[in-house]
Amino acid sequence: MNLDWSAFTPGSAAAGGALIGAAAVLLMAGAGRIAGISGILGGLLSQPRGGLWRVTFLLGLCAAPWLYQVGTALPAIVVDAGPARLIVAGLLVGIGTRYASGCTSGHGVCGISRGSPRSLAATALFMAAGFVMVYVLRHVAGG
Image (cartoon, rainbow, N blue to C red; front, side, top):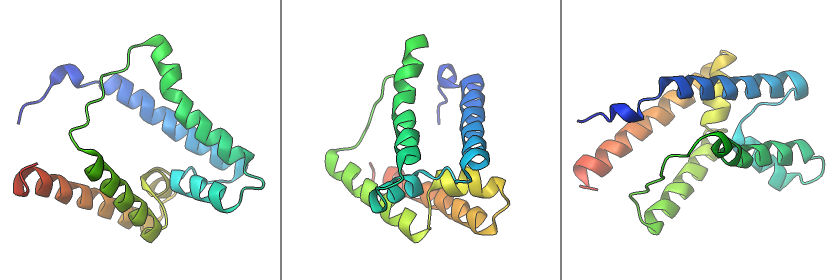
């Protein structure tokens, strides 16, 4: 395995993590809400009334890359998968978030920081499933 040391950016990774953590804390402290993206989006789709905070949060999430590129160039995005694989992957992630009652942001960022055993288990399973899928797709299926 070769590491691309020019892509190793611990400073920006730490800053991004700090911003995600701060956003989660501010949403919890200010609105008493968990910053789980699947729950925010699901709530917006199921309860359109009173969802201004949800819309604002999601718009901020989408606007962040555009605001970031004002100060620096974004890296090139390379996706080594066809549309069919991406659609299947998206559906599997959506199904998984429903079964797990949340996503990596809700369980991994907010749940673990609150000491939730359920979130710790869910995040461990998310990570394990990701490791297995990468291994299978790269080494077994030859993709």
